Length: 425
Ligand code: ADP
Image 1 (spheres, helix red, strand yellow):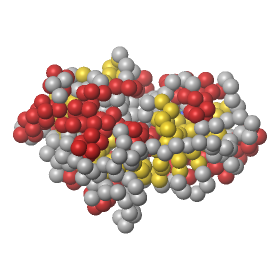
Image 2 (image 1 turned 180 degrees about the vertical axis):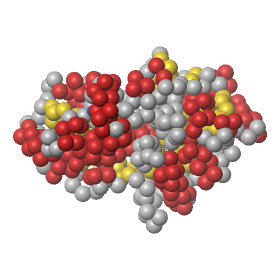
Image 3 (image 1 turned 90 degrees about the vertical axis):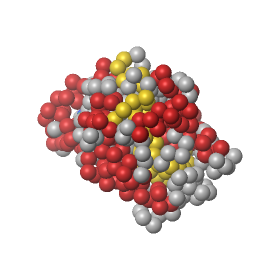
């Protein structure tokens, strides 16, 4: 199949979410973990490839380099449009990485102007007057203000992005009054802003129809940026151009035998609720980062514990903790080190669990999922059935069979883990 869309996602769960969005809208899609090597071929049967990076919280220069390498590979393969995917809660710091990466891709693709729109209405993320809402709260009043790595204290996306790019005057916005008039009007507004030298247009979106119109307005633009939901409008453009086959993008997962484990590294409210829900009915074990740091807590003990339980019931291993506990750990270890330590331990546990025979693995947390996939040396995922909006089962096509869920921290209802496991047993 001819390459159509090349996507660059700044974390793994976000990449899966985007791949699902494209698959659901009839686009055969493959998710690549990490940057492909220069001579890697375009995966067979894919119209879209989503390259999943782990660049959300990497140093700015690393995030830019990785994104440019991915972009060059996608362009070299012949992708007709590039999509830069970030989180629907615009996870970033004052230094980046959304702004610097978008700016670099702007240069690499020769884009005049790009839309910037993290809205994901099905998950209650909307953009109004340039401000990002999570449900009925501004982003800065949501639980995102306590995120361990990317606390979001400002909901004004023009201001947030303006701080991250070289020139804050390059950021403009297109408001709801324009968006509701549809693709034609959005396109005219994009052209008007581009003529003023605006490179980044923060676009309001309150519902899926708005997103479809934004997608339509992006037809033929070299670069689109946004949360995964913005991509819902793109396949229609490709279909109209005759670039897409009539096939469905999602693979079924049936009769998947074997034990299951959940590894949770996200500290989001949603994940902590899910952890509490599962801990009430399954064997569970909480990791103590300080214990891991000073060697009191050991991988082998945890794996022995898992081996003793996992053949009877799914097991849950989690580091998830409320903000005050995370803050205390970060005070002792430093924010970066605490995060890396927990990620590394969960990743090693994933490897151990797979060796012990786990065939179903659910990972909660974007950074955590990135670390886990790297440790498992998984490079390609096919997208399976959807569990809840934005989160599918996936299948690793390399090595022994493994069905995986990579859940972004914020996503899913309290019973998410058990619902996911019920789907494929
Ligand atoms: P989310 O998808 O919610 O953003 P991530 O996995 O991306 O989740 O980020 C959560 C970060 O918090 C990870 O770096 C993880 O290692 C770190 N973390 C998890 N539990 C703890 C803890 N108890 N103390 C300190 N940091 C933690």
